[in-house]
Image (cartoon, rainbow, N blue to C red; front, side, top):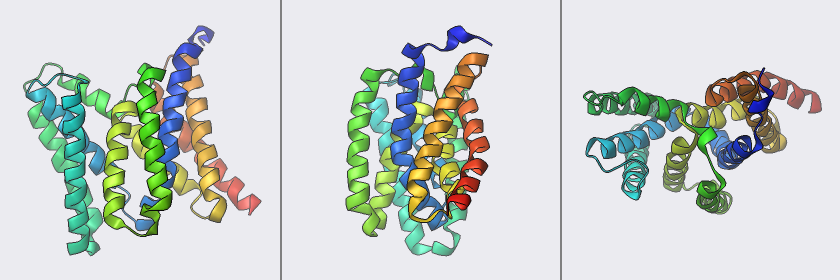
Length: 251
């Protein structure tokens, strides 16, 4: 156990990043679960990641605006295609979403096939680098997420399905580059799944579960020098049954 790992200068921004992700992913995840399109986040995240990989493949440089625009453009394009598919073939939408994910993943692998850093790119895309977050980086993300929440609770929830797809694409694109695909999926689905029968209180219970999962996961990863993203995912999974039981008892 490494008590020196509990460094507030590292864990503080990481927790702030996690709470920002949670702020938007909890309501979006509940909507995804209610619509039965569970893997849309994986598909959109992988498509956004494909945009990042494509930018690297043509040597646009990592972390620049060109990469961000490419990732967002890819995610929005993917969202529009999935929205069109939902209107055309709603009965097989989940299968189409799964196909989109695997096609984007394999295309990314092909683009990176000759890159000696391919493994690093894929690992960073999947697991993320939440411990690298800093407050300066999080300020514009906080502003964007505030706008996302405003639009979500005022426009999108009224039944605007296209708006949902586009808003989802923007949010997931930012979140994937902040915390990685695995944490994005876990933050969307695990809390929503845990409190799916909690009624009106489910939103706040999901927020509580998510915040506790990120906080405890970061502490455990710091104490035992383990990968933060993977530990947070497992922590959310462990806490989910407890939250579900608590919701039933309270109800």
